[in-house]
Image 1 (cartoon, rainbow, N blue to C red):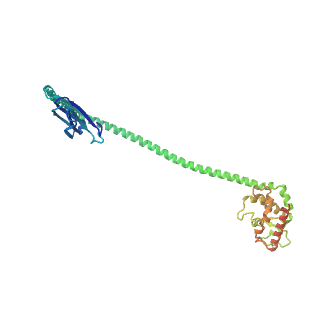
Image 2: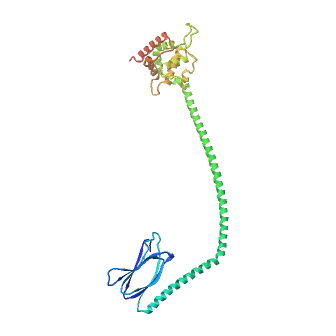
Image 3: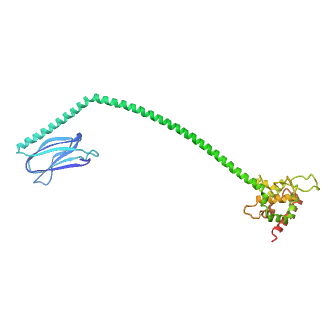
Length: 352
């Protein structure tokens, strides 16, 4: 019987009889038992045995009339436990004494069954007691064997753990070497790239004059007079002229850089490395021709890369920026010369 279930057993009683009942629940669990009877001349059942929770029951019941007897075993009080029910029933007429004896024999057999079951249980216990020493010895031997197996397994485990630890240490050390080698490789690659860039830069410095086109040379000739005025205005503007007016004018490298910075075409501060090529082959003091050649070279460094006529671009910056250029290092006479030169440049550059 499942937990929460019930079992109903209807039994027709064709004549006055004696109902012998014997049942038990396996495992000693209890179950609710009740017995109902409905007379053939009545419509409702009568309760002959009130509901009661028992684990077994044995007895007989006199039924003096005909009808239907219903036996009910109810397991609704159990939520989880299912139960196994064994039962024996015997319905015998009251006048049949032979059957009455048979009922007694059945009940006696049930008692005998209990006795036999108890005897078998006692025999099983005796067998267990007699084999206790042997089972104890077997278990002790098994425990000793398990201890030995456990010790061997622990030894293997510790050995493999040691191997794993050493391998992990080697992996960590290898990773450190890999990281160090990667850093060294990156540094070497960076140095190689820098060296390559430096080599390209030096090559550009040495071959800077290759970028001076015939158009640039022609433009220098056209702008000779205004450039000469600028050269004279900036010559010795940063230094005292100790040689006097009779000395041939020259323009210092710093004065050329100052001129370019003052018009804002060259940023102040450390100049680009390519500016080294501007002064390649010339001394500290520049003549007029050297000044114009250095100006053309500077245009190659300063002008935008996509500008086709770099010298023209540089010269055009002078009239475009003159209004915002303060010319602080020049006296009035030099400023007038520069302003005049810039106007002349504008006329030459924009004459079309």
